[in-house]
Length: 393
Image (cartoon, rainbow, N blue to C red; front, top):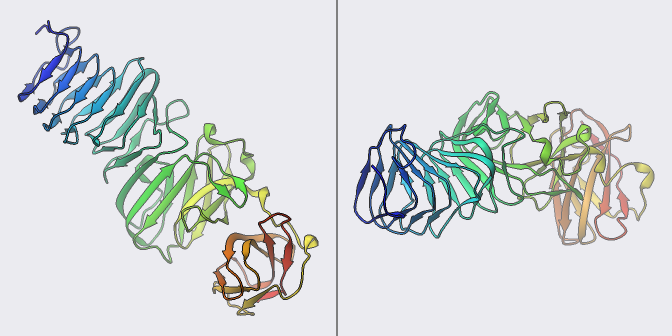
């Protein structure tokens, strides 16, 4: 089969059955315009499009074989572009993007570029796997939605998913997961509990955790069952995401309100493997990594301010019991819990509207004993206020 026209324009159904080994003009299309036709690429068949693929009709492309694209994909049609059990491969050195006015759905999506990256100009979904063979995927502020059985494959320090904004997400059931790297996104979860349907989102947007910038990665982990998990999180990251942070000082930070405020989570870093590990997690939320030496409260010697600035209830309190803080003045604050050796063992941030407002917190303390609370104003001056000691029994 030799194409004599400059493009393939389809308004009628087509069944593509060319051999998978087709090269040159056989099985090769300079330009594909899909205008309402139903296109089926059979199992074992391969169609290679050297130019742009333009979908502008209401037909569905079924890819049970292989569709290879060397240029842009623009989906302005009314369908999700593709389905089936095959693979759509973006290849070659040219700049390539996926765009258009309608969501593009892929069976398996493979990035196989000798140079450069594949840029997203729209949200996409992937029913099979997202495979990085060569080159990377620039999220460019968009969302990649994986199916419950999908995974990210082939990612390493030379080919990876990136983008200061944008997300890659998956939802799947998790029942007592053991060292499960969810969809190979880098969040490894262990728990004896049934978490139920769990959404895991990975983003590379820098967070501001307790006044300091994070690395270029965070995870949002949202299980249906999200209490008493006693879970372990292995947070994996890549060297290019360090954002100037000191790797051997890394700890985890968590936010329960989508990054509005943060608390110090702790954990142990292994710089050789790019992993921060934290156990004993009661519930999941948003997690990121930053230096452990950035705590805005560093010790009792800095304390100043009037007594009675805030009240604490109950005192004494049982280990693991929520504690309520009442303030006499509105403001934005950091709250630190200090042990008897002067070490910060818990750190969080919150806002108060004044005398009628209260803040409940539950410090992750490992043992009973005498502790001190330090409160620092996050506004200009950052004045520190101290409370009486609090007994945890």
